[in-house]
Length: 84
Image (tube, rainbow, N blue to C red):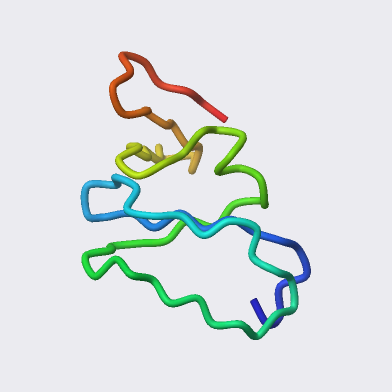
């Protein structure tokens, strides 16, 4: 996050948009390298720091982005979706 001035959370997703892992509260202006352990990741979503905890995002959570780039989050084992 060398040139990023705000703390961020990162959500690593697979090709089916299921969360593989998260990196929380990355330090602004840091040159620390975050190595991802997920070898089958298809993408990374950056959000404001705290988003992962506030929305209870964890491994297996489904992330759906619509054409307006709004997120719909389906928690594992739930019957509905949560919209942050």
